[in-house]
Length: 183
Image (cartoon, rainbow, N blue to C red):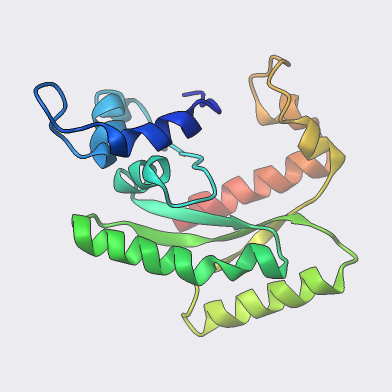
């Protein structure tokens, strides 16, 4: 299902909608209600949520079995991982859902950055200590080709059409295989 930047406005408006004659549920269950009739048609549904834990993201978490944390391997991008894990754990306890962390996916990696290599080493160390979920072995580098793939005006049907053959396609193909191995 395609998304829209208009979700930002919806996210801001949802908590302001009063319960009443036509709206009696929590804003957190809206996505589940909207797509529950279609979920059986798919083996996997990936929900790409905003990089925050607002109402839209909580809706995605509410109906999910697993969650991934995509992260750029730098200080600021990884700084919030403990807060994400803690907030999802609290949400899990409060709602009774059974969601599990599937792992951290490194993206926008710069190959010759000592900082990126150091942060990845630290993330893997914390995963080995069970402080963080696993860090996926597949690392998605920062490439112009990947950024160009966000152009939705181009009609594509497969990842190979979108990314072409070669390294960029192989990175996402490897990530897909690793994802499937862990679910």
